[in-house]
Image 1 (cartoon, rainbow, N blue to C red):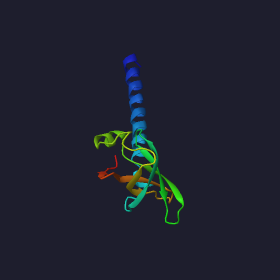
Image 2 (image 1 turned 45 degrees about the horizontal axis):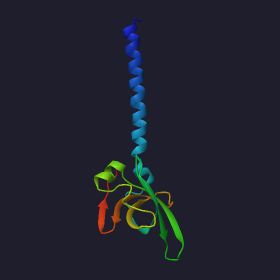
Image 3 (image 1 turned 135 degrees about the vertical axis):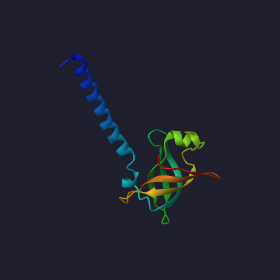
Image 4 (image 1 turned 60 degrees about the vertical axis):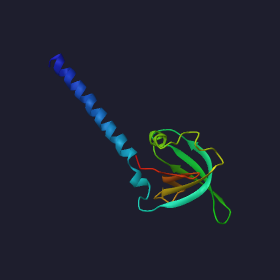
Length: 131
């Protein structure tokens, strides 16, 4: 086998590995429907505990006071930092202790987790898409 044929086979192998790994990453990234109930929305209001302004999806920890007075911490995922920035949201837009109102797609497994679809910041409502 010539060296050019060997090089072509090696390059093809690397290309195939790259395509397979990219496909796995994309499939995992877009598994929102597998984790969250796309047919149900829940509105939560609570105090921001923590903002994680990181990619691939930003997230917040929201402390929600239930009707009986107990506090439940929710872990909520949202759009990418790029999408949030495009909507005028940055890492200083929300501060711990601030009251937030969110509409979420709840976790299918019943845990206190969800994907934020709408975010109410003061008098501004931000509608977010799954990206």
